[in-house]
Amino acid sequence: MKTLGAVLAGGRSRRFGSDKAVAMLDGQTLLDHARAALHPHCDAVVIVGRESGIADWPRPDMGPLGAIAGALRHAATNGFGQVLIAPVDCVRLPTDLRARLEPASAFVDTQPVVGLWSVTALDDLQAMLTGEDDHAVRAFARRVGARGIAVDFALPNINSADDLARLAGDPG
Image (cartoon, rainbow, N blue to C red):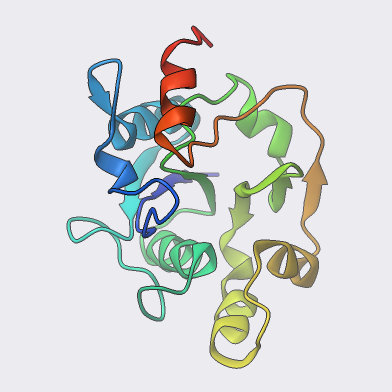
């Protein structure tokens, strides 16, 4: 089954204080790192939530679910069966991430934005985004019967300049 990788890069970076996607780590932007981290797991990688990428659905500022919906819609119309999602600050992924999450739909229980979603979940997600109040990733996961997967690795989560500095000092 073809897998689309999608980097969620449209957040406002309020806690970070500036556009997190273009913050530098070891000479590259976080966006470049996240794209490279997803690449080995996927047949193609797209960026969601930025002007030059895939648009959130149904509109910007819907949070991660709007970005996931945009990615799933793109996947469905381009022949992909599933989408592996990671946020822009998740610059390191384990080499066996996709294998741990298969079969779709599943997510990392400690960081549910990192997940493998079947395009068959798109209708449920669109219904949530147009008609329900709870737009949490975990609510979506419950609705589609996704599995939370326990993992033995710590995914990066960069919410401040201090977090970025700590990661820069950690060889990973």
